[in-house]
Length: 359
Image (cartoon, rainbow, N blue to C red; front, side):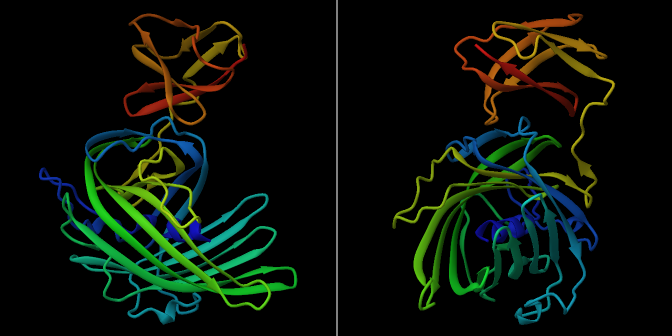
């Protein structure tokens, strides 16, 4: 349920970047009925880099789970919504079903042109057990107060509880959350939907969970680091979160393996992922291959480069394509057997093809 809390909060920061790397309120994102979609890649490699200027390329991450969100109207029947300090005027809702899970959640927010408050949330997650979660933020703890600048810092506090049920077993619990934020970077993020100016926020998270159940009680603390990249068009465009630590100390803030989540569509601003048309193909043969393969470029005038990534989204090779060339040979060196992805980009669209290398 910790993941549910973070997913719901992903839309909470619509901001605007000026030439002074300052973000302001962007009213276009607060529209009832607006929809956006996040893609999540679990336990993947990504390097946020050091503080300061940066360029963060996520365009190769074309696989992962996708969850749609919708901005809905206030409804008093939503569980716990009446317990918010004020009536929410922004409520992102999502519902996701896979072969083995079912997840539903609502986020409760109040926004003005000066600040946004995360009032609370409610949601559940069903696998072999059912996990229910609710929580509320302190009313004086704004998530963001505009404008936001490089070097700004603030703290969020929240508390809540929930229930875990498996068969006849039901365990209630409570939790306290603290999140420290600091704006430490600026530059551009490159997503499958385009390239955007961004500020980067580093976040240190502390959660204390407690249950006094006489048989299944527990008392533990979870800690993690995360990064968030905020852009004009999307609000929070990207988050990257470390695994949680339960040993009593924080994990390394320079982690490079974690959960990566980013937006791939947003109806409020008319942005969505654009793939190359189906009739434009990149043929690879043989595939699988064990020494070299031929990449045949069909249906387009090739130029520039073809980028090759491993399953973690890390670029491992770059092939130069000269104008007029219709075929390129890839003979990898110093790479192990496995699945790789070739990205063929044209303008703001791209085509990705899978290559299987067997030594």
